[in-house]
Image (cartoon, rainbow, N blue to C red):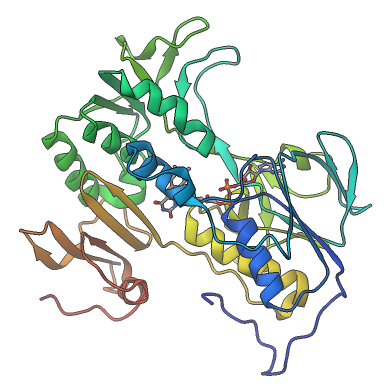
Length: 401
Ligand SMILES: Cc1cc2nc3c(=O)[nH]c(=O)nc-3n(C[C@H](O)[C@H](O)[C@H](O)COP(=O)(O)OP(=O)(O)OC[C@H]3O[C@@H](n4cnc5c(N)ncnc54)[C@H](O)[C@@H]3O)c2cc1C
């Protein structure tokens, strides 16, 4: 398990409370991981998972890639989980938490008691359109895909607003389908996550297949009364057939507003993922407060898994549970490049190229700090066990070959 065990002196950990009734709010990777860990750890009490979605837990990762491309169906995204020992209740939107009374409230009416709560309500896509405007597409939930895929099947031109990893994946998928794609962002594509060097590599690849990039220094406006008809930036307007936004996400915290949980955009948790007594949180909904006081939110798959493991164990074992150290590992696929990253890539510093194969378009890259110590590593189209990549990001600088 990729979590660090807090010191328990080598002794078996003991339960801080005899929990009998744990409720999980959310139905995605953080929720599923937490449920699995609870059962694997021997928790034998009631376990209820409440998800606002109508389908069993699935991975969002392929939605912008193979599912939008039509080369994988949604059934293939299902997350493996046993519904025998978890009471999974679909279509159940939770609308309130009374953390003192230890109850949650569901939209259809009714109160559900708990003695341990896992907040795993994730995030939703941020939209640029105003309430009442329709026709701005996003890729967040499985339910977003059918209408978008249908619309793309008859479209010729697409504007993707947002050039983060999600926007670039969507642009890549659309481009592969033969669509004329323009990507608009106020920042250079993927610069914040991947730094200038990798950003330039991907942009060059995208431009080579005809994708256009537009810098909108003052931001992007959605055009149209009622139905979205295009986007505007500066003095320019674009009227593509389809507008897809990938402009970030908003943690789903509204249902916690009447509680004593601290939310600053996201639910603030400590290193054990504790948000309040008997309440833990994990995944895209959560931001972890570091011992330094820094609050960090990492809305990536591995981080959701790591926090969910820690959150579940801390409900059972309190401070004897492992702390959730931030996991900066993530991957993305766009324009024929499979990219895996560990660590925080500096914005402007170029990497050391440890390996490069021109024919395969593969790279092994490492970034070092001013003192020569490694701070990040990445592969492009190169297979490497994640554990090795992690080592390159944080351990002795490997010799260039
Ligand atoms: C299209 C796409 C592609 C991605 N690709 C990658 C990738 O390549 N690599 C990577 O590292 N990461 C990727 N990610 C990010 C990764 O999928 C997320 O970090 C991960 O899904 C977070 O999981 P989560 O369980 O915290 O929350 P979410 O996946 O957001 O799930 C939250 C769940 O809570 C439910 N919920 C919300 N509010 C309520 C409520 N009030 N009551 C009941 N239920 C509620 C929702 O319906 C949902 O089931 C991608 C994300 C998207 C959208």
